[in-house]
Image (cartoon, rainbow, N blue to C red; front, top):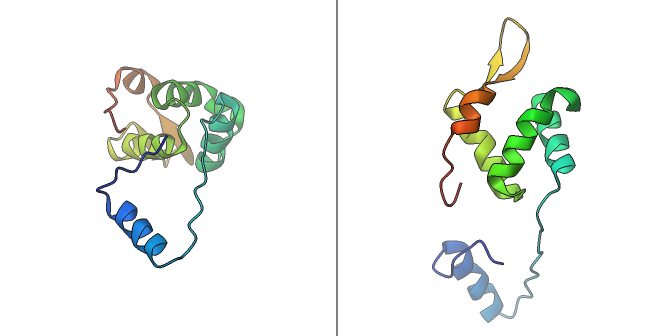
Length: 108
């Protein structure tokens, strides 16, 4: 399934490259398993995987494990103050209750 619509500038550029005879390869990326999302969250937040499982589970269920959506969702959590760096603790922290009820848009 292609996440980029035909009217997107990337689609236009790829079509232009193909028309010039340049070979374009498409890489299909499937959904990430929960453990992969947990590894990504753990690495991004510099926290042990055991401390990220609850957050990772919510992120996975809300994004379906689609990597682009996972990254966009994590970014939106930070922008909305639901995921922040706790200066007192010296580590990343998050509000699971508010994340749990957070609405997710169609395109995350």
